Image (tube, rainbow, N blue to C red):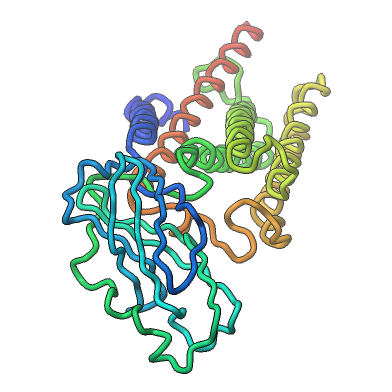
Length: 377
């Protein structure tokens, strides 16, 4: 690590990746979509008009012949809008004439079904409003053919839907613009893990090395002592990143869950993990003897890391009842959390934060060595 410390390219690479992640993460727009549709229900057999409130849309700039909308009921089953009136860039009125039945003959009379609305324009692309309108079936159709009447003629065919224009981040209900916090909250946690791994590796190195007195140009600082300094440096920066991850997560929770702290299982176990690591620094501060302090804190570092993995990754999955991704069979970092555009920013900024954290650890190590050198002169 000390040889790597003398090189500069990886440090500037880390800074460049962090800057790239921050700039791209904040400036790339979200994909056009819709907040919702009003009213949220309609009567079968009647003509209804809905107002769609767009998000990041530019309806006025669309070609009039390239604006379409459907209420989709299944594969090959959809109802095309009779008329679309553009009010402004964010509002459009969609008029549908609904058939008398839902396109299924096994829906009992009086039952309702929520269907999505799909809208497409040549400049905003295509987006879906899930469960946009609830349709109630008054009577039960005699057959499937009767039920599907009116739902097949307006089905979506190849060429009807326009692709998204430009580079955009995905629109996710509830998250909205806060999805950008992925590049800070989540990536800081990844960097924290790499730093803690480096810290525990040097803690093990300290315990494996016997007391060495061979000098290496930094006066009386032995290889064993330097392993201790590296362990402290990496663990300190890892703790800083963990606290920043907890704080950015609390801010994110306020916008998405309505409160900074909800005692979600992953919030709770993460807090416990960081408190355990906090004990590492309390232990070092409580022991005046340098060798005893280094030896016991190295053993504690291994214990803290052994607690970290089950607390952050295993227990939340076992409990299952969590607001975080990765619980109840929902794999984190899947298509619902990241798309290909987000990965172009997410993975580089993880590398950037990690390299930046290693640079901070190098500075911390050098400061500690210089302090020891001053004390031993």
